[in-house]
Amino acid sequence: MAGPLFFTHAMIEQWIDDGEVLFEDDMLTIFEQNTSYKLAPAVRVTQLLSGDDLHGWMGCVLSVEEAQSAGAEHFQGSLIIGDTAYQCEEGFLGAAKSVVPATPVAPVSPQPAAPADVTKTGSSFGEPEDMLADFLLKHL
Picture (cartoon, rainbow, N blue to C red):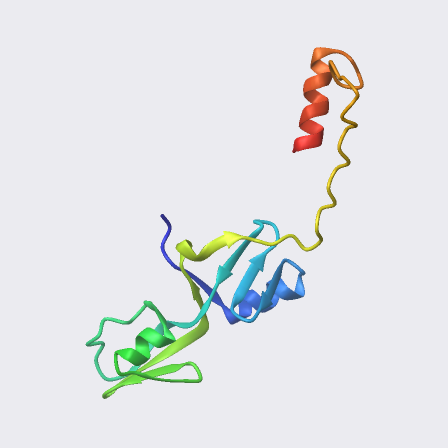
């Protein structure tokens, strides 16, 4: 199973501009993959501004909730914990376990059922190869 995914604000904004994703509330739907990710605010620690990296956060991605529960203050691209300050890249974190099938944009209309009194021995084409092709076209 894949680990958590970090999506930067810039990445999501570009995808929205390109029409590749939909981002509503805390859900990011990627159309090409037909998947949705439940996201939580997160940061990627990019630079140590002052102090020592006693928490080992340099280069790590943390949810904002995780950083705050450890005692850090989060404010506009920075984390401060004790005498240590980090510069961060803002974004969102989504775990692989939160990937769910995306809901289709438009509902698919049901196929009309064949009349019950008609006996069919094959497809409308009549040949076995055509029967398979007909079946695959209707069910895929």
